[in-house]
Amino acid sequence: MNQNIALPIRLVVLISGNGSNLQAIIDDINNNNLPAQIVAVISNKADAYGLQRAKKAGIEQRVLSHRDFSDRTQYDQALKELIDEYQPDLVILAGFMRILSNEFVEHYLNKIMNIHPSLLPKYKGLNTHQRAIDAGDKEHGCSVHFVTPELDDGPVILQATVPIKADDTAETLATRVHEQEHRIYPEAIRLFAENKFSLNL
Ligand code: GRF
Image (cartoon, rainbow, N blue to C red):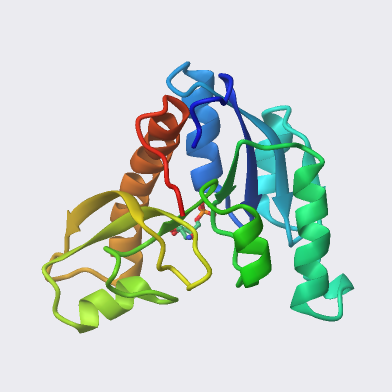
């Protein structure tokens, strides 16, 4: 699927908040570990800290607020048009806190990835760290996966596992998981860019 993509591959990164995964990707590109360029960072929130990270890195930032649209269909249509201005090879969801319509996801099928803070298929959705603690799990982690219309359900590309310690809170566990997110997300993008795998749905 991606064998005709020229390096560096073009990424559009979607965020809603802190953007620490965005930062990990920026750092990996700057360290020449990742043959990619971020052509735009798009946020649905104007105050997302990740926008400042993008600015500092000299990356174009765009804000498209969901509050300016009456429904999901209209928002997703506008988002699609905005993304497509940049002709990305891959769309990266990095803490983008929106449910995406089927039509949007299908438009980017095989070229849209997400990172989720659990060992999928466990704990789709929110509050994953607390849910793993409450279940008495010994291990937790994160997953990079292709996005398909079903929430947090697409084929997994990479996972990382961390131990759950007896005195962990959701916060301490989240910190441990985040470290792994910052390692495996750039790695998954690199494998995609180097054509080590692709998806054909
Ligand atoms: C991460 O925990 C990621 O797994 C989830 O949203 C969070 C984003 O964090 N999808 P950040 O904005 O990259 O710091």
